[in-house]
Image (cartoon, rainbow, N blue to C red; front, side):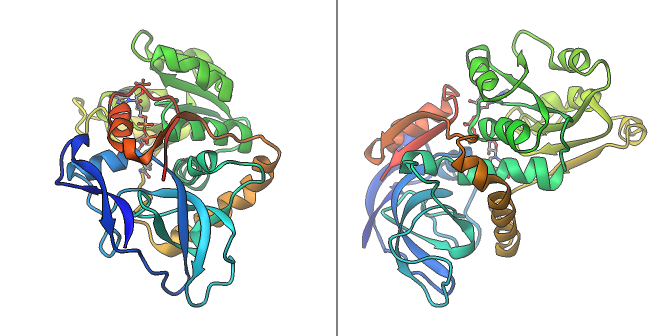
Length: 328
Ligand SMILES: NC(=O)c1ccc[n+]([C@@H]2O[C@H](COP(=O)([O-])OP(=O)(O)OC[C@H]3O[C@@H](n4cnc5c(N)ncnc54)[C@H](OP(=O)(O)O)[C@@H]3O)[C@@H](O)[C@H]2O)c1
């Protein structure tokens, strides 16, 4: 048995506690990782509340990313040896002493990085890479609008857009978080509570519109997002934090005339093959940038995992800028 964060029942953060849970066993192609750190994702809150159950066959323990040390190898593992420091993407099970990870979903921890830093990378950066590169095919010099710019995924997306893909970036966030977005590379900043982002996009792009939008807000932004896209613009919808049903009947002509690509995406329930290719592609493009210090982990706060309820409460308050880390 190992220690893991468990739930008394689905509900609020007070339901979280550390208890005993069977230690997972590495199957074919998997490694067992001694978890040093994990980072929170909004999905963890939804799962805790009972709104986002784990896919079939996946650990019911919360947690989508880890940084730790390879402790044991399952049959057929060729890429890792015991003692390797890795950061990895999981579909569940990261809030625990030990987690099982497929060998193709792990990346080596960048030299000199701490476990806290490394735990911030997998879910956020792979989501950003998937949206901006794989789906939107962002090109150098294009203009990218990133909503929720100081969220865990947002801080990764600003870096991917500007530092890996050579795009220009505009970010929306609440006012106190805009300096962080600027530091990460956003050149146009919008406090969405006091400024209309569609007007700002129009000014920023000399009325041409943004080539790419990464949206997490959904319904309240739907119309303005459509208005803000350029000809052949691409939008990737990753979440609906502001609502799921737009209060607006969409004239399809806007989509047709501007030849828009409107995409939705998820990561957790993708196939192993898809995620393995995403990790391979991201690492191929990002490894040198990590080693050169061009990509950074943005940590809002580090908690001991005994304080997991406080960590969840912080995320639910929308106060974090970047990632919230749990040390296991
Ligand atoms: N589809 C996928 O593949 C995928 C993968 C990973 C994450 N996600 C989703 O992406 C979203 C961000 O996740 P995260 O873990 O990075 O979140 P996070 O760090 O908790 O950040 C969320 C931030 O979004 C802003 N926000 C919340 N509600 C808003 C609203 N109604 N209008 C405007 N801004 C709002 C808040 O910042 P402000 O102070 O700026 O308002 C909040 O702090 C979540 O919904 C998550 O489920 C999707």
